[in-house]
Amino acid sequence: MIDKMAKRENILWVGIISFWIFFITEVATDIWFGSQYPGYNWKTQSLSYLGQSGSPIEQWVRLWGILFTILITFFSYSFYQLNKSNKWAGVAACMLIIYGLGEGLGSGLFPIDPSGTIISMNGRLHNIFGGIGDTGLVLFPFVLMLMFPKFGNHKLHIYLWSVVGIGLLMASFFLIAKYFHPDNFILSYKGVWQRVYLSNYYIMLGVINCKMAHQIKLK
Image (cartoon, rainbow, N blue to C red):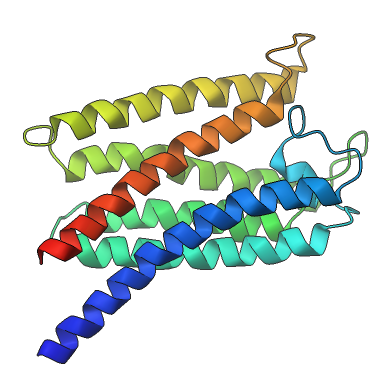
């Protein structure tokens, strides 16, 4: 019985550590990939440009996409195992897995096309998988609010609503920059808005990760 409990706790910690590996590697690869791509502008170009067809680091981006999905899946599994008595835990874990599959494996295996070229099937699949993945991430805080009722979690709800607000604002800026190409020194910074958008949600995942670690210590 004790061995089973210890094994379960180890599995939970693997998921928690996986998140921090994901977070640190996501930041590190963003910086490194950008340094390996001549002419890449992180302010005005999205992360997808780094792995576009013909990119000098296309294979590295694809490899990171696979690892991205694996790490998020580990984290999702630990999250579910720790909260499986809650009826919304499975839904929340699925949202995370959808994000991992869409933005990791999907976007990594199907690169976008270079600017000025006709969009290919790979480019269309990239947009589809990326959109599905982002949907999972955007819905995650709403499911968390169902998991943890406002009564007794008032501060958490305030924080999650702030995540939703910042996320929707940054997503709007990014989409305007992507599809309308405004001649505006603020709205044209597509890469900046995407990174702020992701940082907002990743910090939220970090908060949940710390909450999970606290739950394990109390058990």
